[in-house]
Length: 259
Ligand SMILES: Nc1ncnc2c1ncn2[C@@H]1O[C@H](COP(=O)(O)OP(=O)(O)OP(=O)(O)O)[C@@H](O)[C@H]1O
Ligand SMILES: [Mg+2]
Image (cartoon, rainbow, N blue to C red; front, side, top):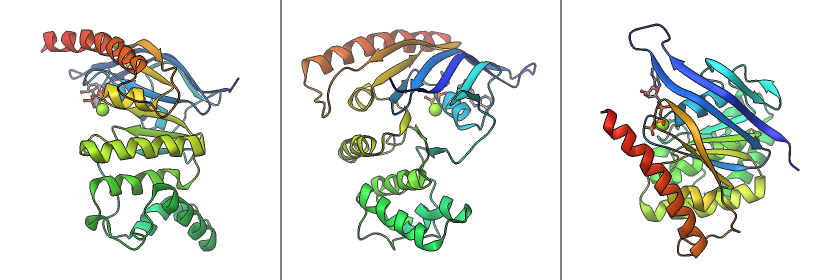
């Protein structure tokens, strides 16, 4: 049985506590994530998915509850967690290789080791031939490939992804999903993947954690018991999709009635 990598028990997050603009972003996030597991986070807009990811990343502190990584409270950001955002946060003035090597350079990894690692990652994400390109000359999908490679460069234990394919067209997104499944199978990184797409969540994950509308809690966790590659036309896929959409729609309609 794989060990628990991330444990979130009754985690609560209030932004600006006590101020006029106080926001109860998360009321109760409770989930244990096992080593090597791929978990998608779904939920209505503003329910705290990014907030949860930022807390695991160590950029935000929980207001209450217990959030641990390898059994110890998360005290801040660290190289054991790699992050990929929706926007392409690459350095425009650096070539693909330098962008990927960023964390390795900062950590003072010897040049030869940096080059070896970057070449390995370039092959893994399928960017051979683009080593010397600048970000502006790359498509959106390619930029996200570079961002994923950069997040993996330091060989983190955990990959945190916040709607990484949200800005991509459907075809590119399909290829990125297939590649991410392949990368996950090769690296076994514990992965938290925020998405608005139920389809993406079911295609990728071992489990889908569904957040309720605010004040949010992890309302339901769906175990996706299907081998890869998964097909959207498979009866089991359709059944998962229906169950998750029904539960999600219930929350989205609550959000709408507040506004
Ligand atoms: N730094 C902040 N200061 C104050 N409030 C914040 C901050 N960040 C997020 N919030 C609020 O906390 C709540 C949760 O936000 P969060 O961005 O985590 O939601 P989300 O589920 O990622 O939404 P989306 O699907 O739109 O990305 C929202 O009401 C948001 O306005
Ligand atoms: Mg978000």
